Image (cartoon, rainbow, N blue to C red; front, side, top):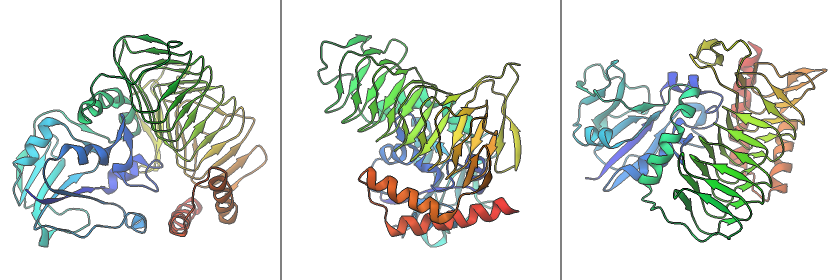
Amino acid sequence: MEMDVVLFDSYESRMHLMPLVTNKPIAMLRVGALCIKEKWALSFAGDVHLSLSTHPSLQAKYPNASLKTDSVLCVDAAICPDKKIMEALEGLRNGECLRDGDGQWMAFRVEGQHFKFEEPQIMDYTEIHYGDEYIRIRYFEDLLRYNSGQLISDIALLGIKKHTSPLSSSNIILGDNLILSNDVYAEASTFNTLAGPIYISDGAVIEEGSHLRGPLYIGENSVVKMGSMVYGNVSIGPNCTVGGEIKNSIILANSNKGHEGYLGSSLIGEYCNIGAGTNVSNLQNTYSELKLYDYRLNEYRQTQEYKFGVVMGDYTMCGVNTSFTTGSVIGIGVQLAKTHIIDKWVPDFTWQTDRKNETYRWDGFVKMLRNKFIKEQKSFKKIDQDFLQEIYNNCTLKNKK
């Protein structure tokens, strides 16, 4: 049946997940091999028009789509689809709302003429109870908690069989769960799939002497540099360069951690750069539960986690030998160049050195981006500049309050 499907960003979910979603919809977050939007696109059968509904500040780049049918299925964008959820959604009728055991809405169906791109008013809808467990990305730690399982689910969703394109005999492969797409280059490296799959996408390069252990995803055209150690529960998105030691982390896309140093239990946004020798602490010496700064609460939130490294928003960069303390949250568009340990929370668009802590000037930020994109042979369009300037204005205004 032809229908519109809208992945809706709730205000509360967005705020808990900032700065990772400061400049993007929740459905653009990667967990496993795929972004949430990609998972939903592959999960529906039939003629479905999939679109996003996000915060008004993002509308310039992610506008609300024009509805094409008389029936709209609205789904919380923080939910990852699975077989049971898809069965429940298939039976949902107009005027019905699917709610979980806590009473939180998961999805609702409505006639197209009555749908509005705003926080849903669904108190009068017929409630359909959903009693099974499911995955909703509420907080940062959920991305890491579910990453390995989602990688396995994504491989099945993509219909990928356990076959590989040929690798050079200089490599060592343990287990039979190595999945290679086209044009993957690897020499003199080890691939340990005994604990979970290793899925490497088109055009990726694994340089000599690298040691990879699953569950692991490496995206299109990404490079694992010589002598790297990449442990399980890691997802590296497309067009990234990584090196050193990485464990239990997600790098969304287009970011570089190309040198020695440890990155563990961490979430790195897009277009970030991590300087040589940077290290991340992910465990307190007291072995106590961690607190993370939460944009929604405007204070630190108890996580019930003992291990967590750093959350880094898009376009953030740190200099050589940077040291991040356990449970750090670094905003979007931050420049860090300090010899001391970085603060546990650094607000968006901050320029921080040993001598100063100030707002990153817009003209300096946009000049840096132009230079970066020219070097990487990428285009920096006016729509992207205007979009980022609105984000910048909103963030710096909040920082002053």
